[in-house]
Length: 276
Ligand SMILES: O=C(O)CCC(=O)C(=O)O
Image 1 (tube, protein in one colour):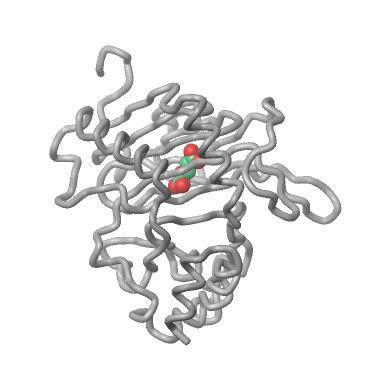
Image 2 (cartoon, helix red, strand yellow):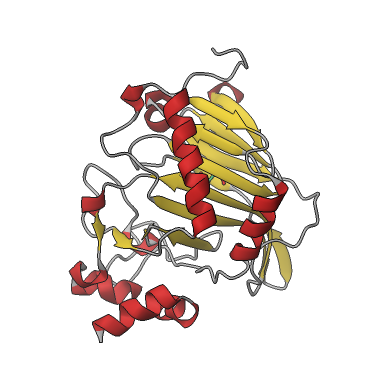
C-alpha cells in the first residue's frame, strides 16, 4: 500500500484536467460521429450459441481502430489484422496523453512497461440511455473483461461518475470476488498496470450515476450520453495495419463502417480515396 491507500499498480487522480481543458475536450467531442458497431460480420459470424448484436454503446477509436467484428486486439494469438491504423490524437489529447505517460512512468515500476510502450491507442466509450422498443433503457455499464493491450492503461472520465470494479472471475455478483472498487469522477484519471490489475483480475463498470443532467458529446440518434470515457492503451506498431494491408474479407467486413466514418472524417475520406 502507498500513503494514499491506493494499492500498487493503481493510480487515481481527481481532478486531472482543469475546466479549460475539459471545455475544450467537450467541444472537440461534439465534432465526432461515433459508430454503433455490430459484434459480428459476414466473415466473422457469431459462434454457436451466440447471436449478432449491436454493441451496448457507440464508440470512437483513435490511433488504431479495433473493430468488434475483427475481434479486437488479443495477444498473443489475436494480433493479425485486428487493428486498423486510425486518426491521430488532436493536439489537446496528445498533451494529456504525454502527461498520463509521464505520471505512469513516475508511479509504476519499470517492470510494468513493455519496451516501446506509449499510449498510442484510444477507445472513446459513450455511456448513456438507448431508445429501444419505444422506451429509454439505461445501457451505461460494461461487463467484466480485460484490456489485452500490454502495459499500463490510462483512463480519463467526463460526465456522470461511474462505479468501476476489479473482480476475480467473470460474470460474478458475489461480494467476495470484488477486489477493488473506485468511483471514477468527472475529469479524473485512473491508471492501472501490472499483473494483478491487467492479467489476474477483470474490470467492469457496474453503473453510471444520473445526476449531472449535462448535455454531453455529439448528438447520437436514439442515444443520450451522460458519461464519456477515454481509455489509452499501447499496441505495438507492427500490429497496426494500414488499410491496404488488410486482406479482402476483413476489408469487406469494415467497408460500410469506413464509408460512414468518411462522411465526417477527412482522415477516413482520404484513406478511402487512396483505395479507389
Ligand atoms: O469506462 C470505463 O471507465 C472503463 C472502460 C473500459 O473498461 C474499457 O474501455 O475497456
